[in-house]
Length: 238
Image (cartoon, rainbow, N blue to C red; front, top):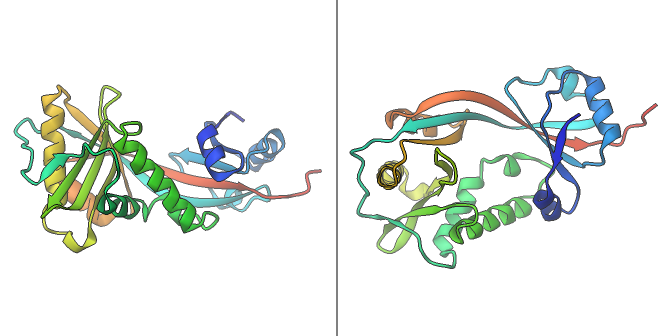
């Protein structure tokens, strides 16, 4: 079966990690894949939910870690940058921003996977926000400040034709006070000024609160994907 070995993930976790880029159609596919590779963890993203027969196979421990919905929005040309929102241009990560990065990851697949410790998942998001601030994993980092305290943030990648929002979080203490709307409006204003017309992202299908916010912002919901982590078992292959 066709897959890509993920060098960064393998180094981070300390064992071989890869991404499967071919559909799983039968348990025999999993048996062959098990024989062909030494990957310990495989990411598998598909449009169709795996049937019980495949999820309970003897070769891999299959964990459904996320159900994501692709979203996109046509940018509002009248969008304005909120006075409390600014582009984060510091070289080091503010403690409030680091804390919010952990908040952004709390419901992610890495925190949901029982085989990944919360400490390791937090470390991953620490690296993510550090590299975003250094403009390696993001081109724009927006923060919402209230009396110098950062209570919301968003990271945006603009390397493709359509920019992509990667991380978004609001301090739970300030939810429902328009922080996410201010961040989204500011993001749109900045992207419009750079000549973009559409922005894309993903959201978790189970996150009803986020989906409600997005609908109010005129966001379109596209394809749904199931995200699985396949952990290598130790069966006897005859």
